[in-house]
Amino acid sequence: MLKINAEKDNIRALVPKYILEIIAKDVEHFQISKYKLCNLILLKFSLRFRSNHCQEMSFEEKEYLQFTLHKENTGFYIEIRKGINGMNESEMIREIFSSYAVLPSFLREVNLFREKIAFLMSSHKEYRVLKFHTVEGIVEGRIEKIDRNKKENYLQILVNGKSYYVSQIEIIS
Image (tube, rainbow, N blue to C red; front, side):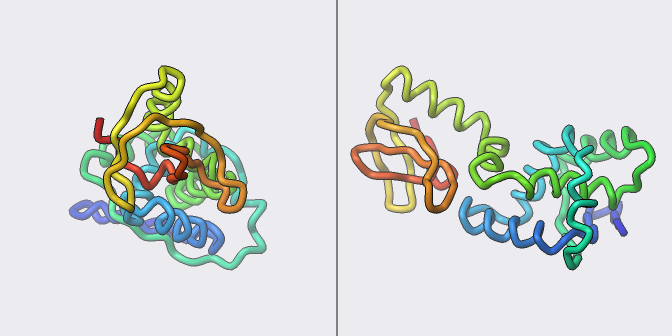
């Protein structure tokens, strides 16, 4: 079931509970709001949603996913809805979010923050000095390494001998 309020552009769809668990985990790790994450997922994963991952999770208990659509995403969402054939809106939302949730953490992150990661990789290759805002404050230095944290499975960079999660840094310059 999908309900869209034309005034507020609220989206509500019944999805496997697993998807909500993944979203909650990523909201905490990326330190962004559920609202922002859901809108990013809608934008970045809407072109790959014909995955049928939701059918593979038919055993999973279901709960409602609800979020408000960014105003700038409303037109995009309307276009996506026009392009779906043989699928209702609720099925479309389940498939988009399922294609996100089945990926490992670092691949979800790569898809959501593609531009940021591309910039970090080019800066690493060019051995540029960058300034970052981190959870611990401002850090300036060169990226020594970009890799996947084996324990948490999210991307991290090594700067001045210290690791920082890519999603938790903001590039200042």
